[in-house]
Length: 281
Image (cartoon, rainbow, N blue to C red; front, side, top):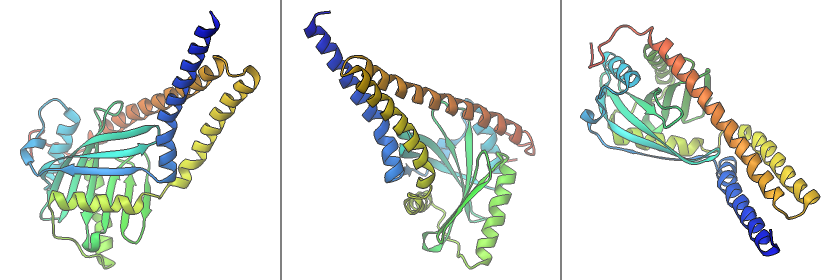
């Protein structure tokens, strides 16, 4: 290879390494400094969230929610900005409301690799913009502040999840929290957006150590290869390759998480009382 061509190849590799590094590290860095951003929207159109026969998991959840007295409100979306390695992730939302109970339910459907899994949430909005949120997840967890109670329950059984939410709502009501009578989709979206804004910085201390470890190892590998080999073609390949390994391991972990979530949901929902998948019992 002649010197001019070699210089061009090395420059192109370094340019690719810089772009690849920025594309991956910037959203991760922003998540660990300013937190994950949140955006949501939706319209009240009950017919738009009727099951269409292509998603058995959602059809099952829809029927169960109807049997519990939750009526369809309409479709929506949720977008997260700076979610680890991802600049943005958009999910589909289907919202429901129980007029008699004064509470909401909504489902989230995720893109690949979590497609085919419907995550269920129950929400109660309170005066002064407070929020109680109960959701399914892999393990029990809770975040409590003066204005927000967010509970994760290790079950995808909709009846069990609704019972946990109802019990938590009763405790908050007895402690003096006053329910918000507005059961519109706009109110649910506004309250959840404000709740996320209040909680945006929570949990950052848990994310930062892993970021420092991964970034430190990548930086040491890249700088070390430059130290020993100079500014030739190998160091940018080291930089690109190590980040590719990181992203590959992340994808592998998300695929395994999705497989476990779908399996758990199938087992938990098999314990639901029988409901018709075309509507309420």
